[in-house]
Length: 187
Image 1 (tube, helix red, strand yellow):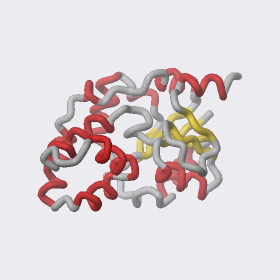
Image 2 (cartoon, helix red, strand yellow):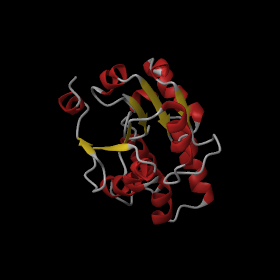
Image 3 (tube, one colour):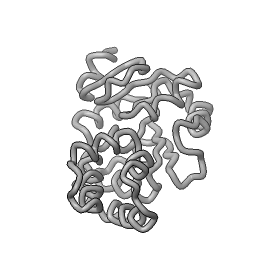
Image 4 (cartoon, one colour):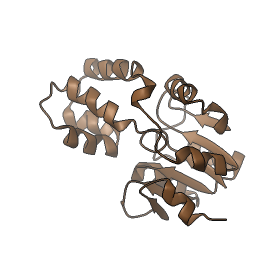
């Protein structure tokens, strides 16, 4: 199976650290639960919702770059899924250097045939250009993400979709844990 992965919230549990950054930037005046709900829609959505200034956005990005990878752990069992797949690729809005930093920290760089990162020049999701590129090169069987935004481009080009820890209608499959993956894809 050839799998296209989102990064934040799909392979790695990054949202708690990002929520803490927003919480700090907003002066602790908004609950972490509310911040998380907006971040799960998208970073851009959260920025607009809270009316962050350019200066605040720059501070958020600077704090994000300084996060210790130990605070953004992989989800349990996801490494076993990576090991099962024939090909794994990543499509993320996150800058390449941050992706590589986290992958290197966990020794996971070799699991991925290719990474399309936020600074590679592709339009942001839900535009399908990056998915088309990866699908044409690797014949992707399944796109896995934690937000509807991650599956829209896959659906638009006929790739099966999986939402992780999200029950938004429209995905082909839903997983609450990666241990469930083995139950669904027993060979």
